[in-house]
Length: 360
Image (cartoon, rainbow, N blue to C red):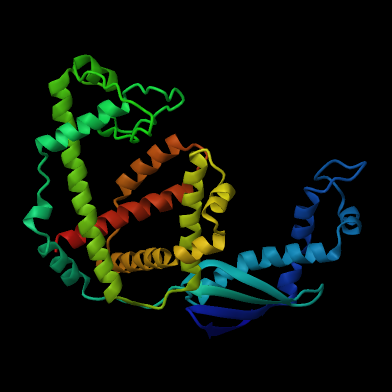
């Protein structure tokens, strides 16, 4: 196979080449058979139509297109491997020459991993951690924290007057069941906070047992919040100090994720995404512009964490990966096992990277 590789702006390349006639012709019968599997013809069983009948019923251009798809599906990964190209995202394939008894001419445009110039990330992390004040580190749970949370829980479970259709949605964690503020016209009839009340919420012996566990939960929430704040500062500092020529395709992928999550959240609330956009008087393109900076940060962060993992040889623990994958596949039985594994490996590896930075 003859190929030429041309560098394009924004970390993209164009691979132009030809697959030899003899190699391309080898895909003819396979392509014809595949197209014939779904063809319905009177007098023939599906998938059992003779070759000569298929040829007379399937346009040649359709067979050629299937041949091209099969050929490049097999040879593109070989090109990438042979030329040592760190391709990312889905390639854009253009067929420039397509005919029987001829070479297959093609052009493939794909993004490649950019060169990432990392700062002294260990020093950056150390400075951020040392700058955390004692007040910020303080995760003491005060009586006020406890009483405020108990009051929120009581309010969330209070029957409402004048609003019979207002059914509050419970928080997934019964210990931190902070729900919506009553609307105008609603009057809270607070339930008495006693042993019966806490037993109705969850597996608690009595009020004291509930308070003890609630206190532990509030403390854990404060600790997690503090940890996330520190990690965010570390991330922002490393991103600011790194040099990355970000491929456009990665930004688009992150924008797709943000909008997909947003649409999913809106749908779960019982609303149509189209109606939500009309209410905002915006189009999807407007949201893509608004969230672009967030998408760029997410894309840069993913590249930076990946690079740190390579430099420091940080990998997820295989046993932990297997355990988490097993749990997720049990919960989501229709999920793609390979995609679940990639997600788990990514999450666990990133956690190890942050733990590594926090130890500096």
